[in-house]
Length: 319
Image 1 (cartoon, rainbow, N blue to C red):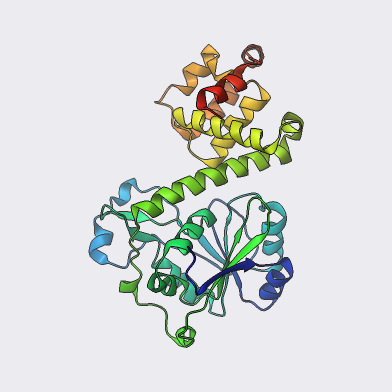
Image 2 (image 1 turned 90 degrees about the vertical axis):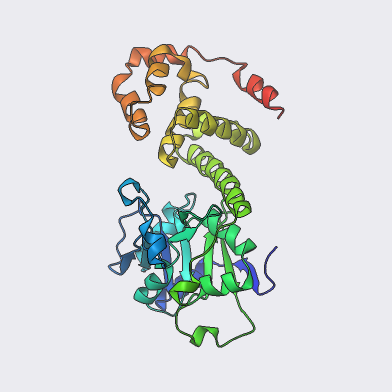
């Protein structure tokens, strides 16, 4: 349930353009998106607010890439609105504070404390994750996280509208204060919040890949309803994960092959052998499929097409 002082509304394109022109619009963006034209950007570093907590992290094994904070210019805003509207690219931030002050603020939240007491990297730049926490945080947690921010904007992947979250506590002097102290910013994650995040991320991933299929491969899915398409995409994501595919790009590529070749294309012996070879790094599997599977083998895989495959799968799952 939303805190009474946290409001949810619409953030229209005109408002975004006005904030951008006033120098008050920022974006916190996943590091793999880019390049960005604005010279005003800072990469958040994986630092912690508690030195002892920071020291127990096995940094040699860390692969997490913190997001980049950008003070948006018109061209970058247009890129987000026109090219990334169906991706989970990141979040908008409205603030009168400087880029350096905002980076200093958000730096304090990159590492958090998990329900088991261990350090977790907090992907609050993921709109699905941010929404879960905005809806479940206490007043103190909201006040600390909002800090110098007037509002956050996230994309609704159903309507493609920008949803605005504003937080206005009764203490109206809050925005005149300095940034929250580091020791107040070590957020503790609850297991119920993590469970909700996993569910929301999964739902969003289905929508993102379904949008990708509609936009880039419409001839494959044009006669499939939204509900059925999303059911099949979810099936493909779960199957892809059994082969240890994990990134959005790899899962989208794998799901695309289910539609382009056959929903059971992975049963072809050569393809199955490669996908189940767990000595191959997961992020390289699809590239190797493209390079090593011959046109003849892809043709053989397409002949595996089973008209009863999809009905049979959803009968098993009870949907």
